[in-house]
Amino acid sequence: MNKEEMLQKIIEVIDPIDEITSETVISECDDIDSLALFSLVVFLKNQGKNYSLADLGKCNTVGDLVDLALK
Image (cartoon, rainbow, N blue to C red; front, side, top):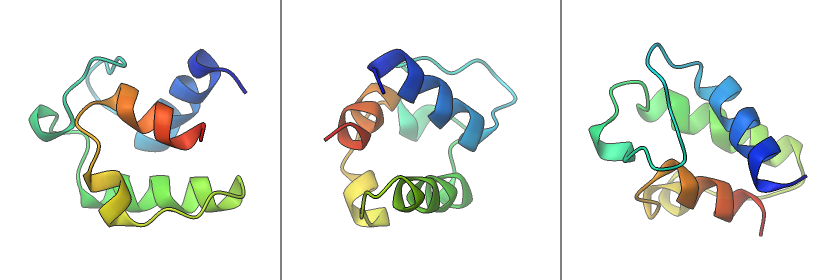
């Protein structure tokens, strides 16, 4: 999966009301709350990746989430 595909999957999981891009700052986005991040942890686990909410909490932007998911 490439970066653009992963970005689209993450956007699907977050299911935002507003537009989200890789430059979106997580702490400034009302659509990315703890439930959205937990859903993302579950999605990544289903992809064979084991990250915690703390791991995701270290990401500043959605692009950082994409990079983490592709590791």
